[in-house]
Length: 129
Image (tube, rainbow, N blue to C red; front, side, top):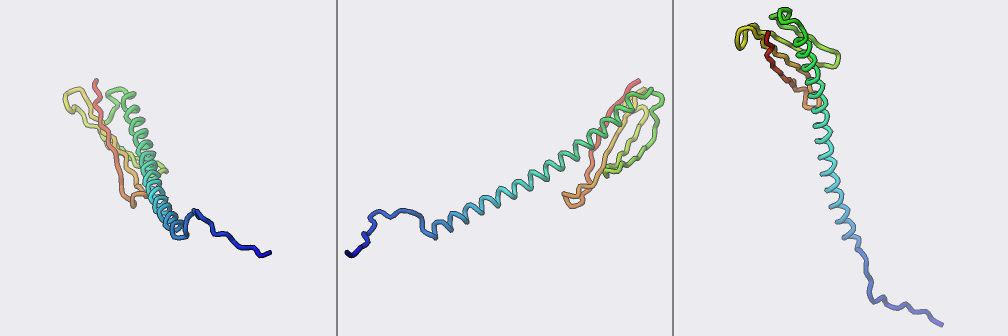
């Protein structure tokens, strides 16, 4: 008895070319998602550094607010911590009106993720007698 193969009537499936095209499209999509992930990580890093700088400014301003009015000196104070943040504060007497002091606090840091750009943030407040 001789076995003969019957022709398959409805052969369905994917050709090798279709599979390769699908893999290329999937790879392009995944590369786009990876690029978006890098941007998100950089944004989170900047947000974290900005939060630390804001916290340092707020604590410096709070220290000035808790001082007696006459002890708030008209001087520039510069301080740096070991995390790379430099704090500068300046007090101006009788500004904008008499019996007030304007306190300006600036925090500066180097952002290595942004190509070693120097970043800063400044807060200003008025303290009245």
